[in-house]
Length: 191
Image (spheres, rainbow, N blue to C red):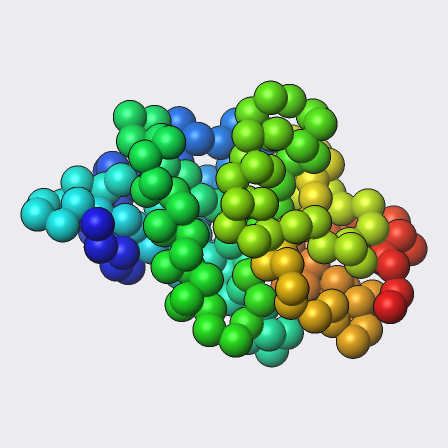
């Protein structure tokens, strides 16, 4: 398996994986996510070594000024799940981040069996809920989606978690963040 930046020839396969993996209330328009139209997303694909078959995708939103990257989406072709592809791609993402923290938005593990399975996957790769996150929601296209912000455990918490969350959240969600920002910041745990 090799991990590369998405190329136009991979878009149809990447689109199919993206649409199969995420419910409509958690998806942005496909073209915005996969074709780099919003922010400065980086789209990675895990491919077979001997051909262009896309096995999985990862969509990153770098926040260089905050020392963090948001792993916005990670999805594996349903036919290739539970075979190590997602874990290998996640480790490539972490390596690519270097000294920056990698953050991921997950459904609360107790919300469904699938959410519990995803949380276990991230735990196996040294991620844990960010202890300072407060009440986190994603401002989705159909309203707020309750999520948890996870990060690579063992990474230090931001020196000022409230300032970090304000800059991270507004940079990630822009104007959509406004309706939720005050509630989010009021719940952020300092120190």
